[in-house]
Length: 367
Ligand code: KG4
Ligand code: ZN
Image (cartoon, rainbow, N blue to C red; front, side):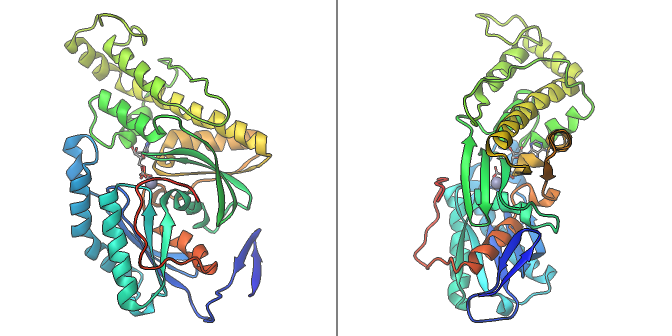
């Protein structure tokens, strides 16, 4: 086994007896994005994603519709990933797929597709944990964090601080006890009458608003854990009271018309103030974790890491605290197969393969 050192990264070369290129085809289908990527020797050659507009009118992902859309999208998405990478199926060394967590029907489509390809091509199969892949999206760029690093992973279903000791050794050291940060964004957007997924829209309006105009509470949650359900309730009451208070009243005084007008006139300031609070909750816990673990390599990941307020706050805080900060490129923040491919690359190097009896799991049990 040959080892090379690269910016603190130990790269272990192929152990399967072949000395040539290592090319992986990865598939991600855990929720409502169908994505395929090709990774060659740890470099992403293509990353193709089909989004599902079908959920917009329902205000959230409808699991059955998501599975059906994955079935329609998976063949064209994989073909396009191969075409874009100028790669033939015969040059693929392994097939990777998201095995957990996610919507079971969605996961099943990617899993069955990956298993069929692995069987027909007689290539190894690599099962990837979606949340670990979000963390390792930080290893795609040339400018990578060195180990150990901390990663704040913020998505629609999870909010975690992960201690990453190596590409294959990770530990969750803090997480939400109720809603995820992405849910806080999406639920705020829903209360404001914005379409799903509302996170990017809250971000867009927040850019024009005053983050200090309205005050929302910061929860006092012990250790490195998070909570967003109190914030959601506070926003609900705030809107029901048309901005006069964010506490519960037996009878909310504002009429429906009043509330709508209040939202219309103050949308940017409401979005900026809510975003400011969500970001401060996240950054304060990250500071606590960095101090507790004496780590100055700090990353973010997951869909909410696309948020401009969070990205800016991380850079600012990093400069103040003397951290080296890392944020994946925009396309690697939300769900994508490139992050599955890079994770599979490291698993391949450890000979960490699955057999064809493996099934998907909707739960986020961390190894
Ligand atoms: O990681 P992801 O694509 O899917 C999950 O695994 O959940 O994250 C999706 C979440 C959604 O809640 C979406 O509203 C949020 O990420 N999101 C954002 C932004 N872009 C995506 N939230 C705030 N600001 C954004 N710019
Ligand atoms: Zn995700």
